Image 1 (cartoon, rainbow, N blue to C red):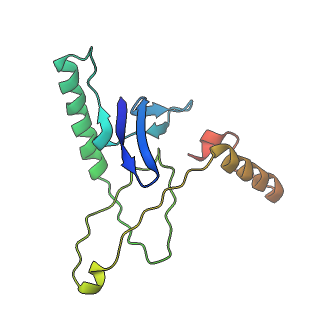
Image 2: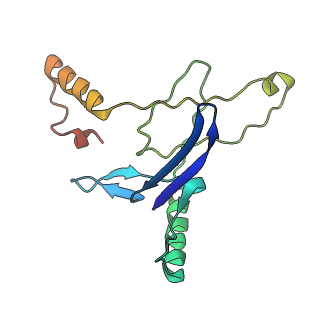
Length: 143
């Protein structure tokens, strides 16, 4: 799968280009990564046949139906934060329509942040040792 996007943002020009499997598994057969960004993904390349492209979109349609069959909605209050593993949790936002003048002045804001998994797992291992816990033996186990 190829994910490609280019343009200009407040921090300057950008050109993202990634070729990777849409779904990858860890050594225990569990989903490790799910890459899904419909606005910037393409399956076709110079060697793709019409049949391959049609088969992909049929499978993608079935996968999309599965995603929408198990939706959880959460309404955040001011000051609340949601943290997710971006390649393991399918996430998005619903549309917003202001129903009052006060709501029309409210802006929706999403701030993304990235962290190094080595640091997260390091802290978990230290806490596990210090608290005398036996939570997991490999990093993949907590997922």
